[in-house]
Length: 265
Image (cartoon, rainbow, N blue to C red; front, side):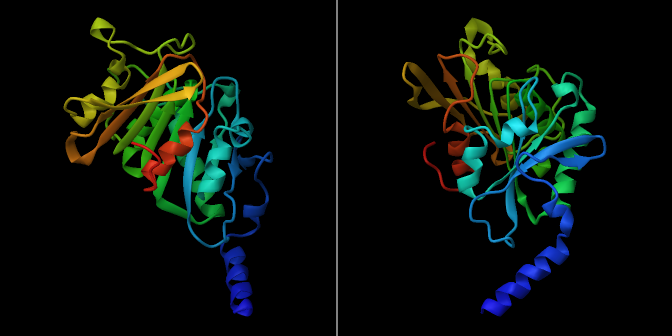
C-alpha cells in the first residue's frame, strides 16, 4: 500500500506541476501584474479536491492580511477549506459600478487556483469584510450560479443594485453602531433593510427571529432567517449592537452550516 501511495502522490505533482509550490502563505501567487495569497487547510492529503473560500479584504489591506487573520484563516484551516485572499489594486476594491474589472480578476484568480490545486467546484464560498464585503456582494450578483454560499460582514452595496445572477445562500452580519460602513436602515429604522437586496431578488416572504446570542461580552446579536424564498434560496442576518469588526468564530460557524455540519441556525 505504501508504494501505491507514493505513486498516487507522484502522479498528483505531475498533474499539478511546480507552479503549485511557488506560492502560499505569505508568498503571493502572481497573476499578471496582480497577486493573491493561498492558505491550505490542515491535514490535506494532497489528492482530495478542496472546498474554497475566497475572501475579499477590507480597505487598505491585502491578501496576506487575510491568510494571517485569526478570524479568517484560522477558521478555514481546521475545516478542510482552502482560503484565497486576492489583493485589490491600490488596496481598494472597485465595487460601486455594476461591472467592475475586479470581477474579472476574481474569475482569473479562481481559474489560476484550479490550475495549481484540485478544487471542488461545487463548494466555492465567497466572503468579505467592510469594503471587501461590498465587493463580495458585487461578485455574488455577477457569478452567483458558481457560488455555494456568500458570507459577509459589515459592508454592502446599494440595496437597489441590479443582481442578475444571485447565489442560493446569503449570510450577513452587521453592527447597529457601525460608523465605517453604516447599516442601511429602512422605513421606521428597520435594521433588516441591510439585506433588502437579497430578499427582493430571492422573492422572500416574511423573516423570523430564531435566536439571540452573545458575540463578545456586552455585544448581543439577533439571528433573523428568511427561508420562504423562491428556488430554495435563503437569507440569514445577524444584527448586533456593536460596531465595525470581524466577530470571532462567525465565519467558521457559517461555513459549518453551509458545508452541512451546523453549529447553530
